[in-house]
Length: 249
Image 1 (cartoon, rainbow, N blue to C red):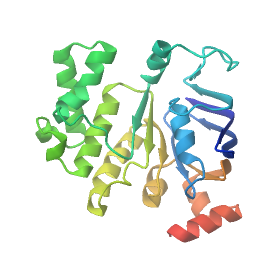
Image 2 (spheres, rainbow, N blue to C red):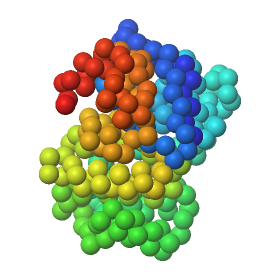
Image 3 (tube, rainbow, N blue to C red):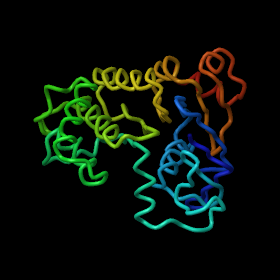
């Protein structure tokens, strides 16, 4: 579903991505971990072409992101890029909800405006999705009336409303108070159980242990280790992995 092929990116004279290759299969949950500045968020944002790469290719569902062909030489039009992005849900650290809209409006606005879904159908779907994340009773609430955890769950429902093939999560619990983290992780675990293809940047090691099919460790813009959680936590192979895990256990 996701194929990253020899991707590099330099910013400010520093290689933030250095010849990164990574495949994510359909229905797989891959968690990216590593120290700050390792390149995790840059890689995640590159999957949606929110960051451009200097070299290499990224394909989602077999289609190149950001380029018209597989050679990586012809950029797609803005409209075509928008069409390809529709299949990629992105949940940010900060919720980015429209403050003047209710929770339900935040969820159904995209399908109506972007996918051309009839408003009545989109509203029904929005209520169902809010129910799926435990917020059916908050459909008419505005973001200012919701807790941080509730806002992030609305953001997840909004991403799901676009019927994505892949969900990307960039530290989705980092802006939350500790007591709100669990409710967001619970929704993400349900998505993992339903075999939604997910790439997640997180420092929540319990989630990584419980929900990930694979954990990918990054350091210095490179992938240094890639293993199932039980093997990675029990017997990390790279010294940098051992050092990083020792700081968060």
